[in-house]
Length: 198
Image (cartoon, rainbow, N blue to C red; front, side, top):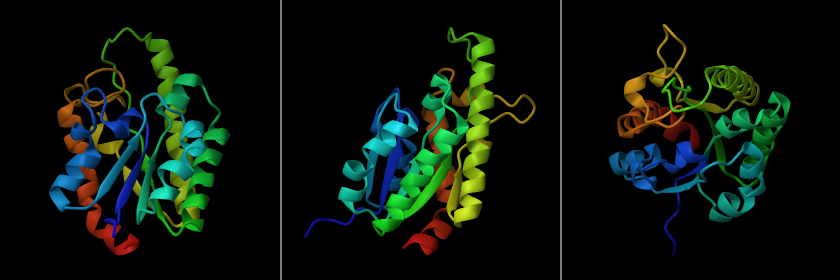
């Protein structure tokens, strides 16, 4: 009999563990600390629309107990409307529930002014759009009674609103220390997560 998967992480490079690989990801670190069986389905560069398109293959087919959905950073890069991103995530939540899988929504990390060649004006516009997505996720979780994981607050400098430089390798991606902080955010909620989901 196949081992039951506890959690699928569905997302983009921030779930995958870029630039290091899945072994550095917050998902892998959580599995190491807890013994939970996890499946990393983060794909570099993907939008929430692309995540939705593979939801059956990468989530429903695997029949995990829970799915942690985190997307939006690439949508913000592409300038996707908030309503479209919210609807993509809402449909994923609906599909998960129909499949008997507990959906969890995660707030994407902040962007970081890392001087990696991205114009500040564009980065500022992207950060504003990303915050609008987070607000939509907060509203959706409240409305649907979902668990919310906050990867934003632990990595942001509250004085500036930008990501804390010591946790990032570039404008958008955490370094190894940043992924460890993200793992701690999950572990801090894990008891509630397990009680609520399993």
